Image (cartoon, rainbow, N blue to C red):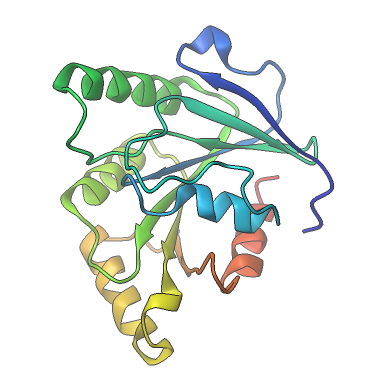
Length: 193
């Protein structure tokens, strides 16, 4: 996909702040520091558009990025990060749950996992949550460049089994470094745009 126009529209915490209109939305869910911002930057060919941070837990709002005036990527706060208070974590949980369960424009969730390691308990819980609400899910297994290509399928198999991935949901092996999986990801998203 040729990206001509990218705009950070709003960092929202409440429903009334969500952008108006009917453009399709794709929410990116995943552990803190799993590479959600790097995924967005690679997909839109911009170096530092979505801010990446070495400090986990940096995203604390729903960040709406409008792409080509055709759809949004919505970066949601990462989960599984310990250095925030329990109250803060609960507030994020409510904010994320409200978005996922009420937003009509949400077409699919992109569950970002780290290909190097089996999905965490939090990843499994997130996937089960998405399936409970019948939200189409695309699993993006990042950091593929960090393991030998010959081991990709073995790691992907572990990820699918751990998540108990249903046949309708696809897993794409991805690297923000090399661009591996970028075309496949655009191809998979195309059906909802």
